[in-house]
Amino acid sequence: MYEARYDAAGHLAGLEPLVPEAPKAIRRRIVENLPPPLLKPIVPFLQTVHDRAAVEIQRGCRQGCRFCQAGMIYRPTRERTPAEVVEATGQLLQNTGYDELSLLSLSTTDHSQIVPIIDALNATFPELKISIPSTRVDSFSVDVANAVAKGKKHTLTLAPEAGSQRLRNAVNKLVSDADLLGAAENAFERGWTGIKMYFMVGLPTETMDDVEGIVRWASR
Ligand code: SF4
Image (cartoon, rainbow, N blue to C red; front, side):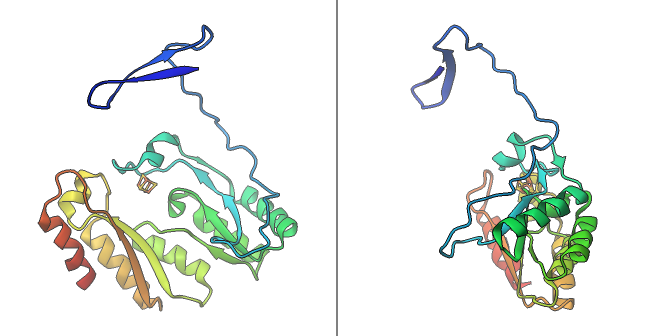
């Protein structure tokens, strides 16, 4: 119902309504409570990536990383309660036959009740394998990853995003050197054997020193 106009440089110059019922300014609407979780997903009959049940435990993200579209457009943060997650998991396992569950959200260890959720799942479904997509960079998150690992510990995924404190501050990724070293120390002490780290190159204001900082970090 709209047509976008662009200037010579390709930047958005305006949005024109094409029909009378389309308002010129579009007001954003927010669903205050998360809609019910998906309980009867299609179960593929060949092996797929992420071949497991999934419950969205939170929408939105408490962090405000400046490069992150999802963190901005899915505001505000809305959470599911531990009871809702357990109820949804029970039905999903029954409906799909999966024995593995992913706790989905933009930043799962930022859920204010992530520990009660994992405790409740472990108590209700002792055989269930739980997976957490990626972990916030701090010691608490390693504790959470540890609680779901149940003895099988290979690689922990952390996302410091930039190789220097200056650049992490610039993109509002509030991770300090101490957080990163603390997380690594905690992980290795608890028996993890590898750490995978996500970094980006090409961030605004980046210098070669910031890029080389990634290599220095990996060595440390
Ligand atoms: S923590 Fe992750 S999801 Fe949240 S704003 Fe930062 S990059 Fe985006």
